[in-house]
Length: 258
Image 1: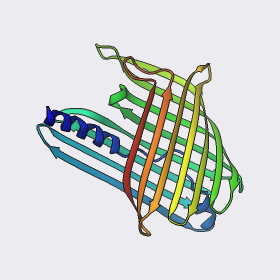
Image 2: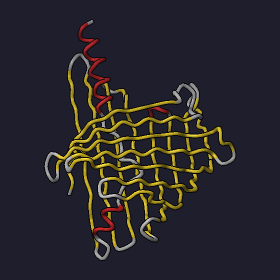
Image 3: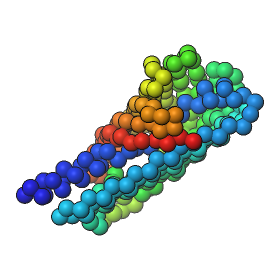
Image 4: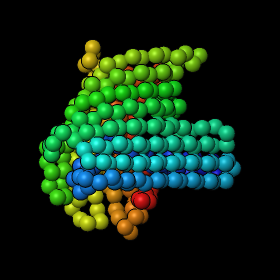
């Protein structure tokens, strides 16, 4: 009884502490303003591995990689993420995505952006989701330690979902509006808070919508090493059978920047 309880608790703790992806809303305005006439590379890599051997073998692996390339008015961004968790040979966590984004700075308060993303998540029966979109992003506030952005764009979404006991494949083709509000705060030199919230209804049926929010607290340990704590929550009005409409994740990890 005690071993089973310990194993169950360990599984949930490892799932709880698996770190999530960086938000699609990325604050790069300050970097571009600091390097208006030069080529500028930035990036970071996160890696995690856990192994627990009790009466079951529990393994979790996760990775997160980001690269930014800035030149004058242009920004290219790539984000990759992968999470895997196993109890013996059974997955309890398996998801990942690849995201590419291009931004063109029109003036100090307006950026045009375009992106594409492909992802999967076995735990919510999402076989594959492909996204592509484009639209403007507005800088509403730009103080030294406080920034606020609003963006809205057209987004095409192609989904393959597993449905029912016989694993039927359901395909969705949706045209959505994707609007977001993003805030970045840095009250102290070694403390930064970022939060972004999305509203994504289907154009033909506004009651078919997705809401999501992600908040991240970043604490600088050294110039390159940082501790990160993230909470994200997603509401989807249309989910596969047996999948809850609301899901959330809390995660902690360390980040190395170069």
